[in-house]
Amino acid sequence: MDSKPPEGNHVLAVLGCGFMGTALLKGIFVSTSNAESRVKRYIACVRTEKSRERLQTLFGATEAVEVLCDDNIRAAKEADVVILGFQPTDVKAILDDSSMACALHGKLVISMLAGVSSAAIYQVLETASRRQSNSLEEKFRVVRVMPSIGAQINKSVSLIAEHDLDDENATFVEWLFGSIGAIQKIQEALMDAAVAASATTHALVVTSIDALVDGSVSRGIPRAVALRIAIECMLSASSMLSKGTELAELKDSMSVPRGITTEAWIHLDQGHVRPAISQTVRQAVDYAEGMN
Ligand SMILES: *[C@@H]1O[C@H](CO)[C@@H](O)[C@H](O)[C@H]1NC(C)=O
Ligand SMILES: *[C@@H]1O[C@H](CO)[C@@H](O)[C@H](O)[C@H]1NC(C)=O
Image (cartoon, rainbow, N blue to C red; front, side, top):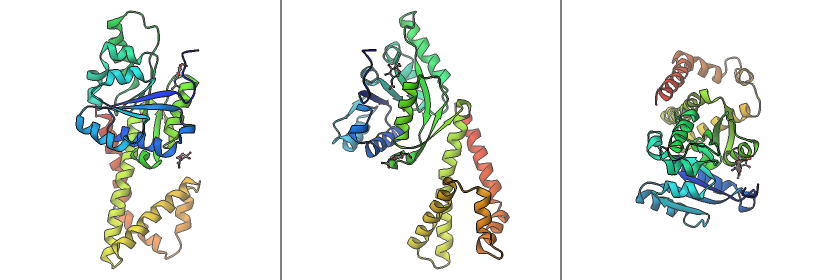
């Protein structure tokens, strides 16, 4: 057990530190102080010089972050936790390499690759490492996680797929993603569907606010006021649900006889808003599941 880094001593690399990887790192820095961090050093790996400069500007002041350009293998070697954040189409190009497989052996690999199963990742890594040697002394440890863009402001809903990691690794994954918001465990088979539901929800909230503001402005409410009302009402309705109010109970409490809210519901139904939303989720899921 001597080789095990003590708690707070992990080195975490993000291979392909793009939009989500950056949001994740930003979120972790905002929400964990050095004292409570289980990670002592971060390595962000990018492909282009331009991205390197972008991250350097963003994290340059933070000594704990090193930005590497086009050096995934070095990053994987130096780290003991490796996050896969590159494009799903680059799986073979990056992982099907015996030095990479060798570097990842026995380490915790967290995949954020949309539409790529953990079985597919195990298979690529095992095939690549067999090319080097026949005996797999250490197994690979892979878990799929999908944070959401709220990660930047500690409001991610990170989906963690069921896995067979040991407790220590599972606790680390929950700590890491718990530090940027809520975590939700899910069967791996439902991962792509849940990611699609989450993306659709973000799209719907933005579209709804946009439409609510336009309607309000057309009836004379100043845009800034309309925007504030829309945002605060979205927050208050969802906060009540998140504190345990039942959906039906909330609806009942808003439906007073001849009430304005009741009138609004009837209009929403006439406009087929509910079936349109459900159908949008179904289509987004089909799209996500057909992606690879
Ligand atoms: C993952 O588990 C292995 C084996 O128990 C351990 O050596 C390693 O430190 C763990 N890594 C993390 C980040 O928990
Ligand atoms: C971030 O969110 C998590 C869970 O939602 C919470 O435990 C943590 O205290 C939050 N951190 C900050 C800095 O707000």
